[in-house]
Structures are given as C-alpha cells and as structure tokens.
Amino acid sequence: MFQHVFRTALPLSLIAVLAACGNGEKTESVIRPAMVVQPVPSTALMDTYPGEVRARYEPDLAFRIGGKVIKRQVDVGDRVKKGQALAELDPQDVRLQLESARAQVASAQANLQLVKAERDRYKTLQGRQLVSRSQYDNAENLYRAGVARLKQAQADFNVANNQSGYAVLAASQDGVIAQRFVEVGQVVAGGQTVFSLAADGEREVRIDLPEQAYGRYPVGQPVEIELWSQPGKRFNGHIREMSPAADAQSRTFATRVAFDAGDIPAELGQSARVFIAREGEVALAIPLSALTADAGKPYVWVVDPQSSTLKRTAVRVGPYSDNSVPVLAGLKADDWVVAAGTQVLQEGQQVKPLDRENRAIKLTAKE
Image (cartoon, rainbow, N blue to C red; front, side, top):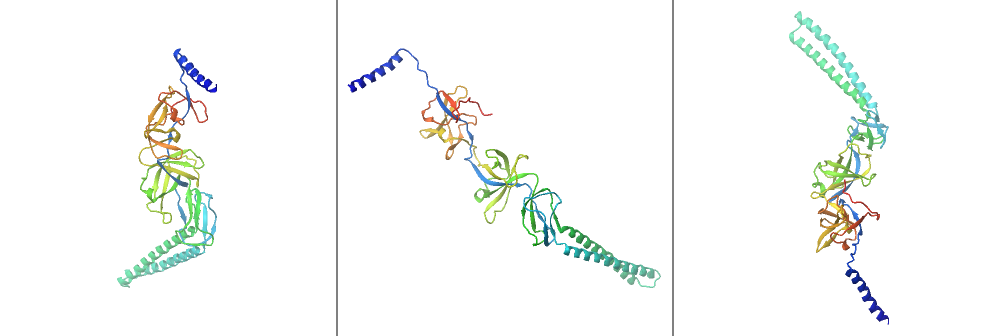
C-alpha cells in the first residue's frame, strides 16, 4: 500500500507543475542576495620594509680640541636649544696654553721696542755717516723680524683664546639628543663624536635594503609609508638617499625615505613600514572567494550599479596570497564584484547587493 501511495503522489506533483505552466502563469525570477566588494590596492606586487622615523638632519657633535670630559649636562632624549651647553672639558690645559700665548705676546712686544730703538739709533748714526750702510741694514732686518714675531705671537694668542671656548660643547641647532658616545672622565680627541643630534624640522624614515634589492629602486622612487601608530593610513613619499656601501655587519644598504608632505605627525623613533611598488603593472586586490574559472580562464562577476545585474568579466591575475588575489587586468577600482557564492550565479542575473554585515547597500562608484 505504501508503494502505491508513493507512486501516485509523484505524478500528482508533476501534474500540478505542468498544469500551472499550461495555464500560462509566469514564474517570477528569484533575486538572489549577493555580498559585493570593491577592489583595493594590492600589496602583492609591492615590497615591504620595516623602518624607523628619523630626523632629516642628524649632525654629529664633537669637541674641536682634545681633553678630559669633566661635565655632561644632557642625556639621550633631552630637547636642547641652539647654543645650549652640552658637555665640558677640563679647561686647565687650555688656560695654561692661553697664559703661555699671552706671555709670548708680551715678550714679542718688548723685543720689538728694543729692536725699534736700535734701528732708530742706527738710522741717526748712518745719517751722520758714523756707521756703515750694512750695519744700518742689519738693524732694520732685526726690527722687521721683531714685527713678524709679534704678529705670530698675537695669532697664537688668538688661537689659544678661541680654544679656551672650545672646551664647552654647545648645540649647533634646536633638536633632540639622539645618541651619546662619551661619559664623564673619558678622554676624547678633537673631532671625536660626543653626541648625535636629531635636528628639529623634517622627518623621514630609514630602511635597510638587502643586497638583492639595492639596484631595484632608483633615488626618487615613489613609495608609501605607514606609521605603526596609524595603521591602515598611508602617506606618500620617495627614496631620497641610498648609501653607496653596504653595512659591514648586516650587508644591507641604509636608505632614507622622505615624506612628500611636510606636516606628517611622525615622531622620532616611531616604527614604520615602507611599501615600494615593483616595476610593472599596479594591481588591485579582490578576495580569493570572488575569483572563479572556466576551462582554466579566471573571471569574476561584476555587478552593474544601475540594474544590479551580473556581468561575467574575464581578468588576469597575479600570484595568490592566503585570502586575496591581485588582478592585473580586467577590473577598475570602482567596480563592484561579488565576493562569495560565485559558482551558482548566471550572466544577466539580478542580485540584491549586501555588505559584509549582511546589510543592503546602494551601489555607487568610488569617488
């Protein structure tokens, strides 16, 4: 009896469907909901390098003379003003040199007075023809030597006087102490770096390029910079400077990247990432789930913003990542693409666009 009922029920259902079609009733097409997205710039064809925000100008500060450091008035991270004293050397040796130079000036002045008087005397005697011409010339030469000796002594005194001021190391401009290389009690040579100053003003990012990437980018290469303090926000920049020699330890090339705009909120020491596009086409990225293929030819479903209907669009793609794929050709940045369920869609089918939160959206082109 069960078999008889099953065999009877199936034809009845088919008869009902056929009857509906036979009566000329129109079946309404189903509008399928579809999650849609717009392509975003792809990082698949971009190289990424970690970096650190640095000052555009970082002068090394050093004493102009050697000596023993007896005072250090600043430390790393301290903000300083132009002309502010940073460290001092023991001034005792400099003072002794100054006193010696002063004594040499006094001696030269006394000697000059003596030889001048002697020359004047010989000049008078030579006019009376009481001394020979050669005797007078000898007195004249001693006088000229005395004048030269005084000039030399005065120059040595000026140098010693200047060096007395060199015992105090002052900031060359406003900024922040970035590095310190000496301690109190240490003996330093003239020109030896004592502090590194990060000058106020422009900021940039330092990155280290590996050997295989050094010749890939020229100076002036456009880049994008992302600060870790502002994730997702990128600033335009360019490569300003590249070191011609590799670091002996890391075998990388120090590279400076400048911001194109001058008012970037970048603080010294902040971490950053620099994105550099490889030569070639700039890609747009779509979710991996948005891509499908037919006979090995990839395509996506693009939604017409006016009619919400689907159009099968062939694309050329790059290397896949974990959850996205770069599209090299076939899409525009303002296209709307179905992001999931692509296998059950058809050409010309009307869909109801939804966002990732399952909310209906009105399709518009990117501004």
